[in-house]
Image (cartoon, rainbow, N blue to C red; front, side, top):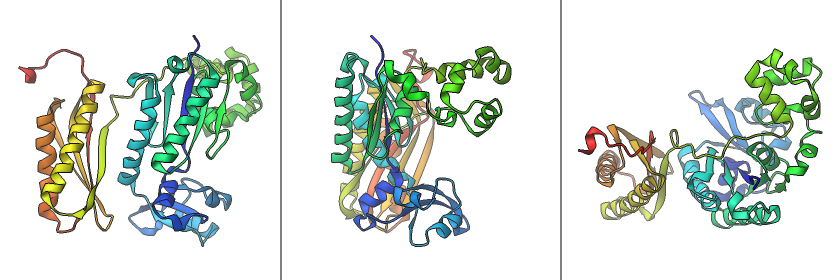
Length: 362
């Protein structure tokens, strides 16, 4: 049975979340900036909505230049911990639609691959139904949109998700992959950067069709064996890389709001216990251990603060997680008199459990 892969890409993720949180931003150009230590005069654009993009505002553009392109745009600072919280909820929706825990691969805060080969039995009509269901789940539960690409491998699925943005879905069957790729500029091929694009242009290669028909040995002589071979295969729509959870560098976390802004310790630690239970359940399900514990607090003024602790060795024990998380939370309570709005817990530095006991287990 041929593989069927879905790529889900959230639409202008950071700006979309800001629009969701403040409905008055709808219809306005919204730009989310990563400001430098020079304040709003420095820094670069992290993302922008499509209205801002129509004015020529792009990611990585200096914020000062972005303001000159549209002085009436709404400029907001990045709230990374909050976006990560939303991302975690979205990723749980996506993960639940993959064939298995191992058939899910988060590749960034706002995009992921899902292998649905078994779920759809190779039927692309059923695959499209799954894609539409994912879009509806994300929209109904998180009030933001995503674009979905479906194809026979990660390369095609990734490129398909960009084909109809925002809020689109594109299905590319195996027999249609070449026709889908051929007319595109070579820079659209996933994995090609500016340096490679310029080199290919010097060689007279401007479309993916040009690259697919180029002599493989010539590509290898210019780019080396590995990259030359990859260029030829990718341009032909060939990609055998598996969808695989990136457990070694991933993290597991949960965040939630208190019933109301408060410093009540019973309320805070009761919610923290729920989050700890959820995180440790995911740790056990994914058969990993962790070495770092991070607690996040968002105060009533929306200021976000985090505290982390690195353990002496990897563990998957609830008691150790609870002890460290509660100690970090107590530090927050001692250091600040402000009410808490949201709290979160995260474990990092994950390591797959191999089944072999360490000295610490005895």
